[in-house]
Image (cartoon, rainbow, N blue to C red; front, side):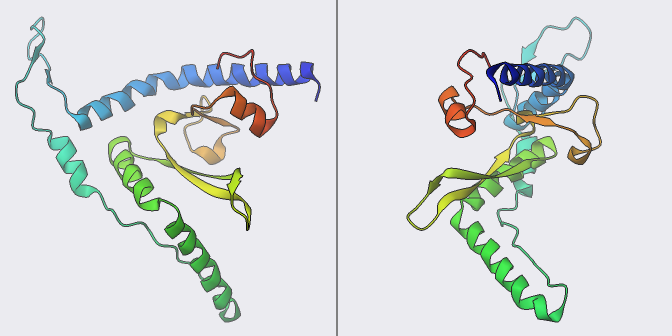
Length: 193
């Protein structure tokens, strides 16, 4: 791909990102409001119009207490079934492999974070990706799983029925330009975001 084609492609996706971000911006305040309720607020809503803004000296964060009471620290375990009696052994092998991967990764911490996000925001996205830069002397690369907050995902504008119906969506995460160059082979030194 030539530099000109690469620039045109980048410009096209940046326009899509801008359109999708503008459409998604109105939901962002709802996310912030839910987290404000969870973390507790001293602000009192005025009872009558033109009432002075006041704060309360006491905060009993009942929302946080109710959410914390619903947190389940257990990591869901895999269950794989074979299509036939002969394939039950293979299903057991796959199930054991998944269980070993869950034990190797910090799934308890990820599950704990995800449980809170789900209770506060209504959903969470697990992103599974392959990191080819890690590994050891026996293998190259490793599986990486991340629990993503809904504010980190920008869906396609106008599609509200689910991810399967979207042509694209964007993931907001902080990274460096050097990492993008090394990982994807694209030079973004002249770009803002």
